[in-house]
Length: 297
Ligand SMILES: Nc1nc2c(c(=O)[nH]1)N[C@H]1C(S)=C(S)[C@@H](COP(=O)(O)O)O[C@H]1N2
Ligand SMILES: [Mo]
Image 1 (tube, rainbow, N blue to C red):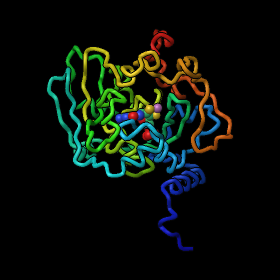
Image 2 (tube, rainbow, N blue to C red):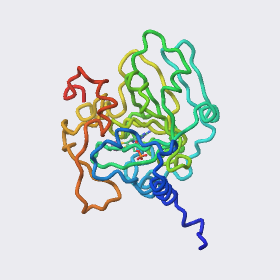
Image 3 (cartoon, protein in one colour):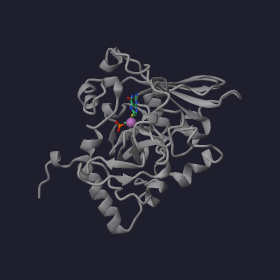
């Protein structure tokens, strides 16, 4: 039978590969399932269809509607690109996207993305641990946090022409959170280049935190002494704290965080319970062991 290349969606390739690996009883090193996801009791760990992953997005630089990023990022040019690592470091460095690709080969990481709005997806990301990148500089003794900045480009990003958020988009992590091996820089998904709407050419992904921590189109990473104020904290400090760990026990002031809707399963399918730290409790709970997570939300 002849298969049209148009029929071979990345999603089909992945599902077939999964089946194949299962049949052989193998675990493939390229098919890396994060332990938290394997152990999780989630009703559904199926991959979210590529079409949903790339058409239902949050990326306020391109508008606040879910379909705005796919529509308005079509012509976004993210080449050439570089990331500056600066702040409380002995010597700042600038790495081009080509340097980054050569120095840090991407591997597959299947992580659930849980948005604070109450929906989730399971996505085969391509990326590498952020700690590899951070180890390229020597932080000073003052450094305590890592601050991330997305690109500022109102010419290409229509949303930045309005003061919806404090542009450029900013996020932050504690150094130990940033160095955790589960924290990755993402360069692709479904084995392909990262689509513009998902944060091309490179974005952060912190699987145990709400989606908004995972900043897209990153151009600057700074070691800093003081806790950074993220764009969301600035927009609404009551709703969005610095930590933003997925936590079913702490409600958003306007809605519960106890359950989530799995994107792609249809609006009639039941919501599933949200797990502490998005299912990565075993791997990351120690980072917060003496903290009151109601206070540090
Ligand atoms: N620069 C930037 N990064 C961002 C956002 C944004 O608006 N701007 N939205 C965040 C939110 S709220 C979510 S849920 C995820 C969505 O990622 P996805 O569109 O790849 O699924 O990106 C996060 N990263
Ligand atoms: Mo989100």
